[in-house]
Amino acid sequence: MKPDVASLVVFAFLAGCHGSSNTGTTPTTVKTIQAVSGDGQTVSVTEAAPAPLVVKVLEDGAPMSGATVVFSSKLAASFSTVPSTDASGITQTMVTAGTAAGSDTITVALSGATTSDKFFLTIRPGAPDTLRKLAGDGQRAAPGTTLGHPFVIDVKDKYLNNIEGVSVSWTTTGGALSATTTTTATGGITQVTLTLPNTPGIAKVTAQVPGVTLVTFQAEAR
Image 1 (spheres, rainbow, N blue to C red):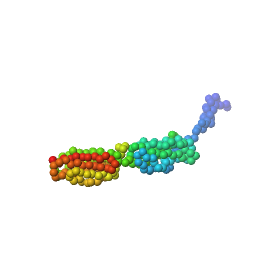
Image 2 (tube, rainbow, N blue to C red):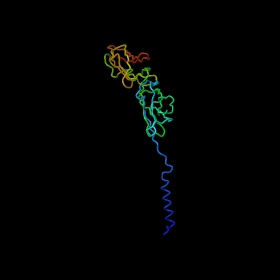
Image 3 (cartoon, rainbow, N blue to C red):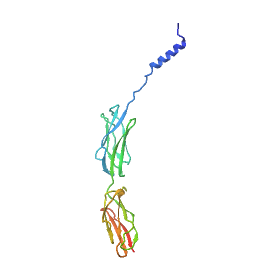
Image 4 (cartoon, one colour):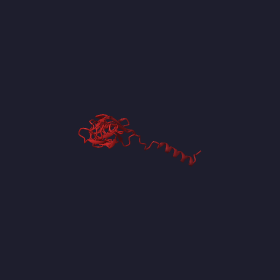
């Protein structure tokens, strides 16, 4: 018995589909990127880190040469030219801190990669540059009493980053201060209180850091 035409057509179609199921399939490659060295460095603002940031790129677990990686910074640090990865899958860059102090996160990425990686850089403020009066100026109280509010200042570097741990010297032309030396805390802030002299008059209180323009407060015993 001869097969009918419709059956032959269906058979040929199924056979063709089976024979071409793997035609044109491209194996999927897996690219990964990993930080190798240079993590956890500490620098001051605008300072270059002493060690390079080194990364490695792998393709299906083997070193990938000729890959272009991109470094980016949360605090606007800058990077030297990043060469393509070498035969070992390695490339590196030198990082220079920007003008913002803080904890910087540096991300390294590769187009088409299934992973990215990070470096962490601690950026310290620069040297003290500015003292500012924040509170306490112009108070009045009875002679011999302690003023109700402290004299408060902060210390910043030239880029207006707050500086913690700065020693500040205080002097007064009258009365008694709660301290003659204080240290700035978080936010670059420190303070003293004044007990006014026993006689009416103006008392001036000065805060000073070496190399920085001093600030002066005034209080009146009346």
